[in-house]
Image 1 (cartoon, rainbow, N blue to C red):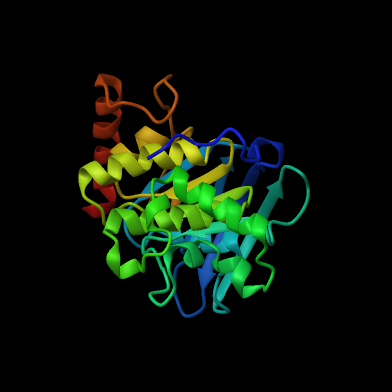
Image 2 (image 1 turned 90 degrees about the vertical axis):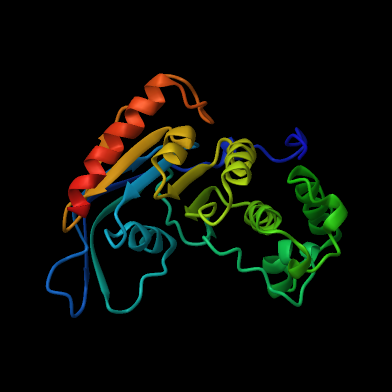
Length: 260
């Protein structure tokens, strides 16, 4: 994998900060709300990582931010964006599954959004090739997804996310299906390539959250509320030292209460 090019646009010029205050989410037909009195800050140009048991509302929160909640979901609360404008059209979403289209080659998958809007230009193709070089897949531009390993497919998905060039990136356990070494490498690569963007990462892995977070939240209880944890003074992507290991133990002990 190559280092990020210095010729790419610096997203710090358009990164957004987001603040949610007293958020409340209730699905029609459920007796209890999924989220209640949820307040958190997603700092401009930094990674915010969310941990919590399955079903606590982490993905629902991402769907709310992305404008993808279903019609049976009712949201209340205040959401403030640092520039005062709506989030519509300014979010990229990277899911646990790579969601590559099997009939398209790698290059066309990276350019998918441009292809769907019929605005694909030569500049777009040049940028897509640059991104594939950054994620170490320049030689695989014409390959189909079936020819790639799981880690390679997620690198294509990362390049496709960057191709959208959005200031906010939502990531829903994008590395969870990978082996430990591939996961570690992709964490580092994502931290480099998404530097200065506003990233919200959902993960079940405390170590991953500690490595990547500038802000770390644990969602606890039913309905869930957020607890912010103090992080080591080092900058992400962190190496797992004694302080990080102790924090990981603290997180596991907190999460254990929700699995009792």
